[in-house]
Amino acid sequence: MVSAIYQKRALPVFWVLLEKDGSSNLREQQKVLRPAIRLLRKYKLVIIGEARIS
Image (cartoon, rainbow, N blue to C red; front, top):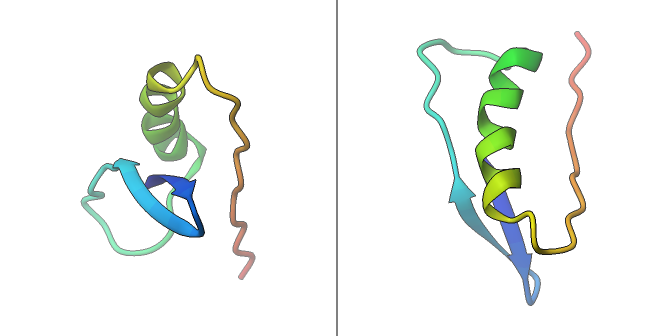
């Protein structure tokens, strides 16, 4: 999911449902990020990610 933060609230702007449980890989993350970045390209963006190491 890609969210925009506005006044301390996160508003979802784009998401993809995965066909599996568990974390996503780089390709799946890019599938979500690319359309959102294109949609918001005229705005200043800060991309924050979460890494899970097992």
